[in-house]
Every structure is written in structure tokens, then in C-alpha cells.
Image (cartoon, helix red, strand yellow):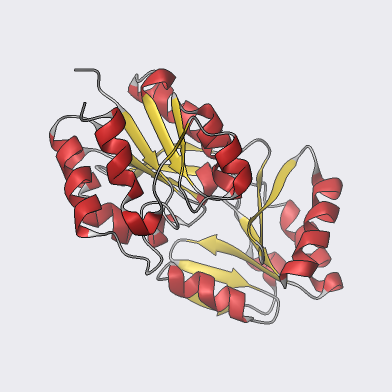
Length: 269
């Protein structure tokens, strides 16, 4: 048997539109791990926001991985220790924060189980904290508080504003930082070249699995590099069109157990 690694985005891929792993999808993901294959989760979420799903899939028991913060921090679920990381130097906190204040948009970063902001709390931040089971904390002096290298910055704005700001921020910080939107209202900033593909490449090198043995499934803009990188790149039926255009295979939607179809087609054959 060739040992394979199945890499899954969470929202819109692993979970359905109710943010749930269906019983059938869970059954098949446990089945392939019992057979010796590896499951890894790859998400823009911070690690605390991935734990619920890692626990449901028993990644600690079977030795799976969590590529958090869009790949900036990769965690071995068996040990809860990082195996790969690439953060934003803390010197950028003031520059990004000043831009956010000037343009009236939100900005957060992350420390342990807390989402930290110095800008007024908005609905998007509250959603981010709630989604990831983290405390949202507003601090008086954001720049002084951020005395650590940041795994990721997240800027929040209405979609039409976020589109404009994404381009301006990319122009300001390229090539030193990576700027992209994971949702119409979320602008994510990571260290240069950090993405799901780079972190997966680093992980595979550590665990001795070839790229050709990877199956990467996603639906969003931030899944594109991973889908293109994988030995088999899979787009969900509900994926953004650009992801579908670059995939090797299009499966069913997250509401129709699309991951089960992938497992049957490429792993349990």
C-alpha cells in the first residue's frame, strides 16, 4: 500500500454549510487513518479554531497534522508541537495598524487563545473569534502589546472596501508580505510566500512523504496554491471558479459528502 496524505480545507470542504462534519464523511476519514493513511487539516483559521475538528477526526490518536494560519504554523496533533512555522516580524505591526486606522477598517492578530485588536470591534471580528472559540480583546496600545512575531494579521472591511484595500496593501508590502482575501470581507496578511502549498511542502519533507502521494481538497481562494501543488488537486463543487479551473478533479459539494467521493476514488481503490 502506498501511504497517502489527504489534506483538507475546513470551511466549505471538510464541513458542510452548517459547519458540521457529516457522519458519513467522518466514518470514511477514520477508515483511511485506520488503514495507515494521514489526514491533515489546512485552514486560514488559528489552531484553537481547528482543534474541534482535529479532535473529531482523532488526529492526535492517528498522527495527523494541522496547517493553521494558512500554513504559517504547522502543528503535529500527536504532540501539539509546531513542526514548521514562518511568522510576520513584529516590526510590521505598527505599519499595518496605521493603515487600518487611516482607512477605518479593522485589524486583529493572534496570541495563544486570544484575538487581539486595537481598532473598534466590528461584526467580522466577533465572527472570527466566535468561529474559532477564542476570546476577542481590545487593547489600548496595540503596537506596544504586539511584542511578538505574528502568525497572521487579519483586516476586516465591507467587501467593496476590502477589495480596494487588498490591492493597496499588496502594493505596499510586496514582496515582503503575502496579502490576499480568504473571504470577501477578510484580508489576510502572512509572511512572504506563506501559503498552504509552501507549508505542506515543508511538512512532507519532514515526514518523508512524496508530493505525488498528496491529495489536496479545497474550495476558497486561499486553497488555490495547495490544489495546484497536490499530487491530485481537488475542488469542491461549491468551490470558487478559479479553484475549479486549476483542479485535477471536481468532487461533490461539502453538503453532499464530496470528501467521501474523493476517498473512494483515490484512496480506497
